[in-house]
Image 1 (cartoon, helix red, strand yellow):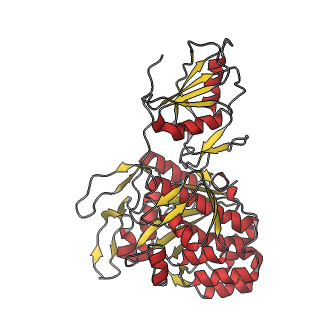
Image 2 (cartoon, one colour):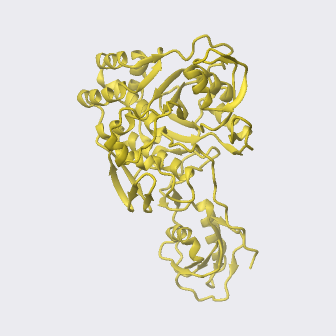
Image 3 (cartoon, one colour):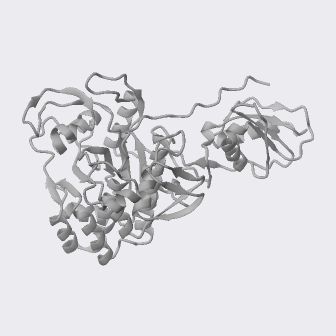
Length: 475
């Protein structure tokens, strides 16, 4: 037998220790652009007058050149003043609000208004904050290193925009800021959001407890769902997956069922959001109507989600602490794609796929031919590799040549991987073998008919780890 490949190592990504609220940010922009085109100028004008205005572009110089499409910087703050004591207890939202940024995202709306690309920027990203005057103390600061979220604490929206533009070389057209409070109430107003789980989700820290299946979450439950990071060893990585699924489900509900496309419902939603939103002065009625009119046909497949590629965690910096280091080459290419108005997601496969718990790209497989049919091992190896499995590319003939039913043997510690492989080999038998290790073994039998395409709820797809909304919503 060939030397067994080392089992793939689990990916890890250091994310913010605070809850990530990217979903509430995109909730706001989704509501605005999906509804405005069908409601009318008068209603949108009324909404606009209630939004608190900021001027993040004042006195800005030496900005990046404008690209194609529209770029919106969305910032989430930790305000929770309007959440009741009962809600804080029920959904485990203790602690005082810090009124700081816990999420920073760039949302790119394509020039043809047919695609939205959402890129999350980790709040602990290592940044060079530009020269500025502290908004609180009036003290002048030279350019200095800091965590990305420090820009908001030191200089508010203006310094945040300047720092993001400096790091990404993407010109920001509009600024939108949402606080913690609006998330739960917005979900409740639209009647809840449906999510599906392929394994039980339980987190004692947030109180999340969902069995396998499909669930309609209200605002509080949705907050638990997107906050949880103690469900498994994937920590923030799996939390990011859930956030993407939730956003996609929200867009699906708003766009396919028309939940928001009536004046009464629209007024309910906007009245919920108005008290929690701040936006730049240029993001007014005409802009909202133009986006809404153009994006009325927006669907989950029109949205794509990713995070800036990271290279790891920097050693602690005095006065700053540990920071997230971006992958320079990949992040530069990612933001160039935004400037060029190009999609981030890879081309879509033409065939339907089955959702599994573990991505095939993370599963190492050795194939054996258990029949007298020449070349069967090679066919199985190639078919599994074509759907993403990490086969050895060196199939072997088994000692037995009379296997009728295809057999998968696996170490019990890799049982989730085995079930994903079983989904790709319909009708195969699973057999646990203690001590086999991370390499799964397939004994192809005479019953082999082909490999079913499978995929996981895994955002690491394509060069930038991008998924589209319809890939992560419930079937």
